[in-house]
Length: 352
Image 1 (cartoon, rainbow, N blue to C red):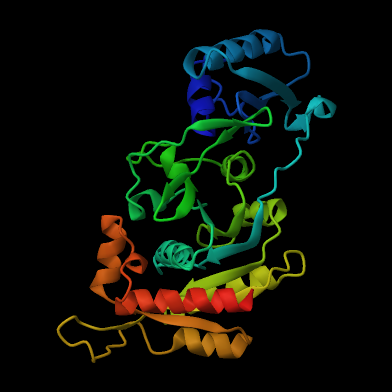
Image 2: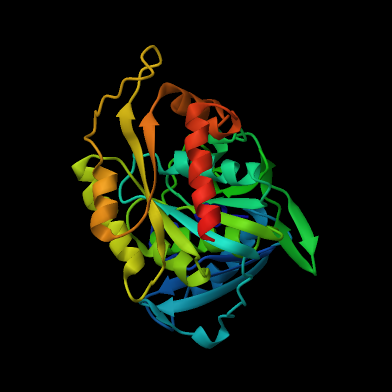
């Protein structure tokens, strides 16, 4: 199950006082929590003695059993104008931590700089070195890993372990992977509020059968938001990799990303900067370099902020084609572009 199913089911429940459904009325709090076949969330009422409260709660339970799963176990809490009326009843479940030696976030300050391309190829490069690797596509609103790994038609299944129902990650090219893209219609936008997105990601982390991993990579959404804070709180990150292009506009946002990780409340080591689209090299002129987005911007930022420059990746057609066709370039051993990602992986391995 995933939050959108809960939302869609509650659209079938109308509040008698207005005739509008619960979602349209803004009565669903941003706190959906799913664990196996259990779901909990809060409904917001205007007053504690609301005459329709019991009937709405009962109708909500019925809607979930009808439109989601008849075996679902539902826990509905109530809030009055946003204040918990039964906060003591909300269960605090223990987080299931990832069993990984190294947990690395791949981040970019802005979209379109190739963050997901770097995350996908780095995961495969690490797997090529014989390590067990997991990859979480945490870009809720723009999941791209299913396409990059040629797994768009895959659907994760459930497995039982120690009495718990867990999500089995999809394994492709030696990498275990989960993405919200496996659970939503790829043609529809994911319109979730921040807390809802964070809860979905926590489920993919805590309620998944990742097993024992050497490296767990997280492809973060671009920017700085509460999703990033949620992941930092849920996981003990080993470090972060910041992806940028040499373009000044991208560098401004990359600087903000580095500052976020260095903030004393987050305190995650920045392992280095990857400068993507560093130059353009046409296939027919492999020795030529054209600095379309500027020259050495990532290098200069790394020197200024005293972080390593992990690598400079050229803008070449084969890297783009590999991602679009679901066969990332890191799989093509011996390819010059694959060698760059392999070198980045070797630097990460040496530093850990």
